[in-house]
Image 1 (cartoon, rainbow, N blue to C red):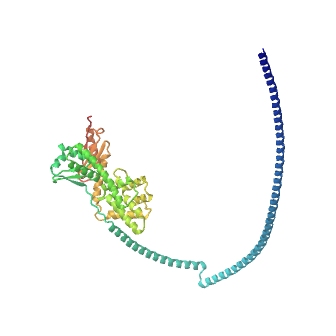
Image 2 (image 1 turned 45 degrees about the vertical axis):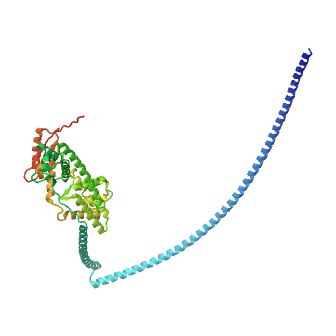
Image 3 (image 1 turned 90 degrees about the vertical axis):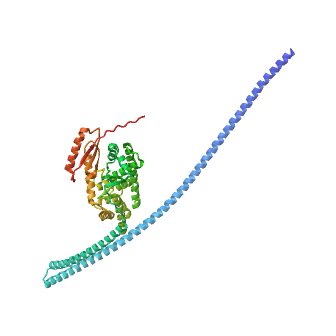
Length: 513
C-alpha cells in the first residue's frame, strides 16, 4: 500500500514538475520573442534613420554636381560668346575690305572703259587710213579690191595645185617602187624559206600482190568477193593483165585509202570472203580515222598553232584526203600557214594570228561534201561553232574576197593562199574539173528516193547505185535506172556514155544460240 502511495506521489510530482517546467519554458520563450521583436524594431528604426541619412547625402551630392555643371556651362557659354564676338569682328573687317576692293574695281573698270573708248577711236582712224590706201591702190592698179583678191588667189591656187600634183605623183611612184621591191623581197624570202613539196594526186592506187593466184581469190566465186569490196568501199577494182598488182580506181581519196588498207589486210590475212571483207573494211575505216587524227596533230605541231579544239584538229587531218585542183589541201594549208607567218614576221605583224588563220582558211573543205554551201561559208560556220577568234574567222571568210579583211594578217593569208596555189606544178585544173564531174554524178544519183548510197567508178564512165530493198522493188529498179540516166543526160556534160548500174540486195542475218 505504501508502494502505491509512493508511486502515486512520484507520478503526481512528475506531473506537477512537467506543468511547472512547461509554464517556465513558455514564459522564457515569450520573453525571447518579445526581445527579438524589440531588437527587430530597433534595427528597422536604425535602417530608416540610415536610409534617411543616405538620401540626404545623395541629394547633397546631386546638388553639388548640378552646381558644378552650371558653372562649367556658364564658362563654356562665356567662351563661345567671346568666339562669336571675335568672328563678328573679323566679318566686319572683311566686309570693309570687300567694300574697299569693290571701290577699287569700279575705278579700274572706269579706267578700262576710257582706254577701250580710246582704242575704238584709234581703230576707226586706222580703218579710215586703210580704206584711203585701198582706194589709192585701186586707182593706181585700175583693179577693185575683189578683183585683185580673186586674181591673187587664182594664181596661188594654180601654183599650189601644180606643186601638189607633182608631189603626189613623185610620192606615189616612189611608194609603188618601194612597195613592189619590198613585197618581192618578202615574198621571195617567204617562198624560199617555206619550200614545201606537193605530190600530184591521182585517181588510182596500186596494191601489190604476192602472186597472180591472189587475183582469183580477190575476185571470188562468181565475183562475190570483188563485188562485196566494191559495194562496201565505193571503189572500182581493176584486175587486168598487170602482173602481181590490183588497181583501185575512184575519185575520193578517203574511200580509196579505206579500200587499199582493207585489201592489204585481206591479202595479209589470206582469208577472203564477204564477211571477212566487211570486217576488214570496218577496221580500215578505224585506221583511217586514227590516221586523220595523227595528221591533224602533225599539222598543228608543224605550224606551231596551239589551243585548237580537238574536233578542229580532226577536221584538219581529214584534209589529207581532200584535193583542190590536184593539190593536197592539208599540205596546202600547212604551206599557207607557214607563208603567212613568215611574211607577218617580216612586216612586224602578229605571226601567231597569221599562221592560225592560214592553217584554218580551208577548213570548210573537210565537210563541203557533206554540207551545203561553199567551203568558205562552211568554214566560217564551223569556226563560229567552236568559238574561234572573230579576227581569225574574218581572215578565213576574206581569203577569197567574199568580205573585206579587217586585219593585215587577213591580207597576208590571201597572199599566201595565192602563192601556194599559183606555184608551178601545184595544181591541175583538169583533175579538179574531173573530180567535180564525178561528185555531180553521185549527187544526181543520191537525189532519188530509195537510194542508200552511190559511187562513181570507172573514171566516171559508170555510177553504181545501192538501193534500199524495202523501198525499191525489182520492177522499180528499171524505172530508177531510166530516171537517173535521163537526169544525167539533162544536167551534165561528159564524153562518151555513162553506165547506170542499180544494185538491190536483200541480206538476212540470224544467230544460232
